[in-house]
Image (cartoon, rainbow, N blue to C red):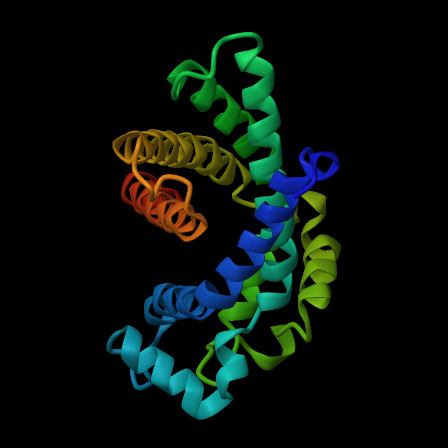
Length: 239
């Protein structure tokens, strides 16, 4: 990328990462939400999902592939915006806090506040989009939600939520989202930065160090491990 593009590359890269995350991960999230909600509310004599595979196969049989992507519109918009913001804000905050200090390795006193600051901001984007996503996901052929209470689209869901519950309704669960994003991003970027730094240090002097595919592979590996660390440590914030 050119020099003039440097300031924006974190935002654009983050946006693309968010879109890819939803494209791959939304079906799994739909199954998770349905298992959490449907099996909790199910009454005697109605269908209960045995496991994730049973849930996924049932959705495919009754609703097709589009059933796995129910509520994905708000997720695509929310995650694209959220990922763009978090990577952009984190990078800019890190540069600001580093100031004139030498770039000689990860510094937790810079990484953690930068990540938490970005997490706090994106929580105001994620909270309403996730609420709409979850309310859309629990609808479907096997849903116990009455037909007259079902939403026609993510936009209809957002409008009806604000109409019936007020602006505060669309931000229901905001405190938990704020805590999750602050803590989660601090954990993610700490793991990501340290692992990436140490792997590159091990490759110092190697022909592999400057390889594009190697660098991309390191990014996928360290980002994946960072994501696992987040899920292990803050999963109880996600209901």
